Image 1 (tube, rainbow, N blue to C red):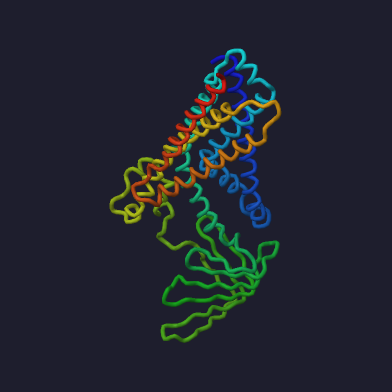
Image 2: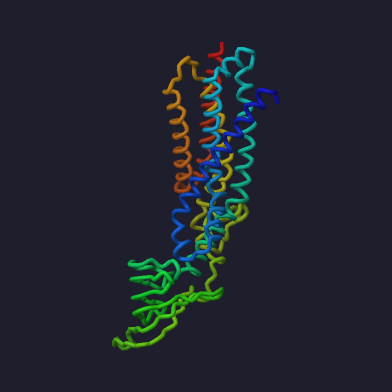
Length: 364
């Protein structure tokens, strides 16, 4: 690699790292705003916040890499253009392809990184993310109860709490229990406290009543001083044994669905679309970068900065992202059209060849 190419490559690497750091910081901040109240006021362990962020990153990084690459190319080559570095390099005999080569090398590296995320890290992190959300919802359900609204816990409980004290004590509690489908019950208590350990989550109700209908449809009321209510998930249910969505599955699981599972049979198109999407995302990273650099080099040089060209570049990035979203959705919805995920890389390649031809004409 020539000295000039190393210089451009280093600039691309530095800019991409800073842009990635900025985007991830904004993403983490948006997540922290949602969870900070639960951590400070409700006692939700901070480790859950950190795990949610960590498990979310492998899902978004492959989607962000094409955008980061495009922005990095724009910032680096725009600065070189405004500093007249591109003029000097081209005047000294550096060809357009020599200016494109650093982008090609860098795009290949990011594409390989994207492949590692989409094929290996993202499926496992998606699965861990959903398991963690389920853990928070069930093991810390009583901690997350909101005041003044009806909170749905699983399929069997609807809980209303008028007030929660700073020490965690609950006041004026209403609970609808539908575990027994033949005999629904309603519990009303003046106060209560949640009791949680590694095995179960319970609410200790005090000074209240339980109302239920007997088999002969008569209303019965049972008054109590203390009542211990277990709000755990139903016995025998394991979240790990549930049906997994396509984004949680490994490539082997996507290619070998269970023929005895009705859900798998009904989602065969989604499985095929997920496979092609994981293959297309790394290619899109390469295609986006190639298209942006050839487009920028095909633009004529002006002594005064042309803001219209900047708008064109950002509009092109926006159009590419919109096309990526549309193609991925259509690949899922339309039968036997999962290959639509590859249309974007074909589109980028053809446009790149067109703009590269224009760069040679401009130089001539």
